[in-house]
Image: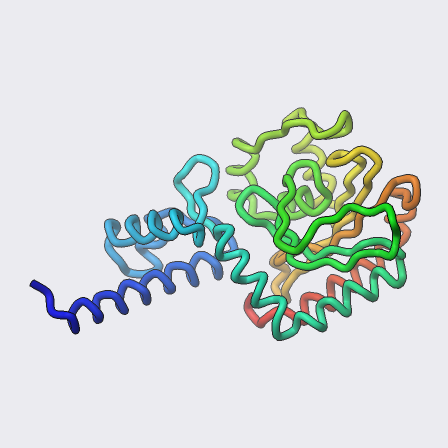
Length: 259
């Protein structure tokens, strides 16, 4: 029978391996297979498989569509959200507030969480008519400006995997539901460097999103602005593009080096 000290050592070792695995997936910027994790962590396959199962069950990891790749899970995203709210959180909110002051509409800081978009932070405009989404809220990827942008700018292999299984269910008559048309939309977004929501998620609501990138050009998150179309047209949104892009550059500077 194992002694108490031995059990404690084994417990600490398991925690360390779990944290190393989480850190590896978070730093990779893409979903990883068990085989890739085994090679990167120098651990046997049964150990990695067991860790992935436990961390998925508790929400720290999530399986991507198809079940062979692991990525950051909702519980880990919430942990990251809480960290972001501290430290440079005040600076980030000041950046979002500056956009709201200039444009007059709600500004959001978003990122991918599996096959959805999560709101990391937001500053509301002072209008009675607005969409209420608290930090931590999730929205679909295929019919929102942030979702389409982040999907379009993913590494090709991961984007291809998601496109094979993404549900293009209509939310409004404007939602793009044809796979070929959706692929063409992503190509256009990647070319022009920003994304638009043409009342695809909610009728009467339009949005624009631009990427937040690191020094290597890797996309970390997005700055997005949405508003009722009766008050804020898509043409007006594009006119404000430089404001959003400048905010994205400022936001990137608030993120940890190598994020």
